Image (cartoon, rainbow, N blue to C red; front, side):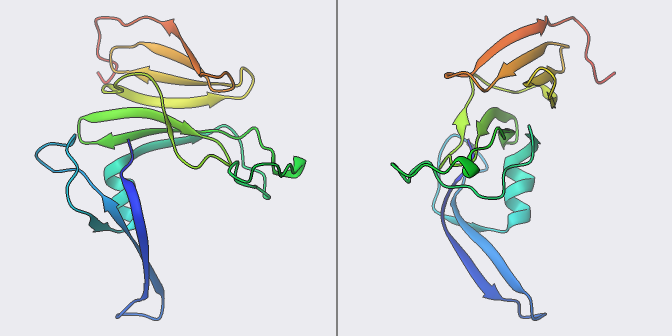
Length: 162
């Protein structure tokens, strides 16, 4: 899953007048990505380069969003059908996850996503599709609780990268 962001640091750049944002994260050990280490400072670029391989949105989020943590407050303008699917992880340990406006964290989807090559959203079906190196194509319905996946095309003995 994505590293836990402990805090953020914002400061004025020494080389220009622009502001710089960095994050303090509980990052992975380079030798063992499953073991957390001491907090590390990472830039937004490093966070996206090393922990997010791809993001796919189902639609543009609505402009007015209230976090779901504000219990008892209902604002119909804050509702959105938007969902974001992410291929996240570290080196060879990738995982699928998703979130929706108002969520306070990512929700992991089943199993290891190693070998996943691409993903798209098809608005007509309202489904996300993932494609693996082996040729396996899966459809994901994130509107269901819990989300449901189904195999559209089984794996073949070919590597789709060739």
